Length: 102
Image 1 (cartoon, rainbow, N blue to C red):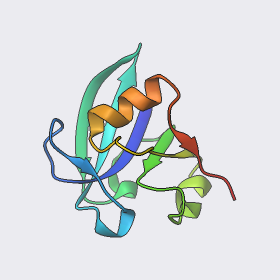
Image 2: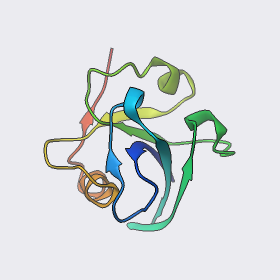
Image 3: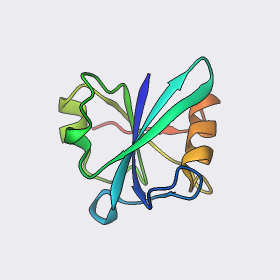
Image 4: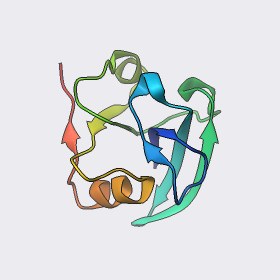
């Protein structure tokens, strides 16, 4: 499954989740069997080359997510303290992210 995260930085270990308007890159995380298999970085979310992205995780639940939802993604928001890709994915794994709904 593919998970999209807006981030500052391009190092999978150090990149921090950021609001969409401040994102330097979009991290595309390939998550399978409870583990991160790979992380790639892209300048824009719609230029990842992926046919289907399952989830997007945003910095907060008040961000505009309509374009992501229209593309078929389920959009989630991180919780306090989930600042890195690793912590966001850990939150995803244990269902500790919040759903965004309109």
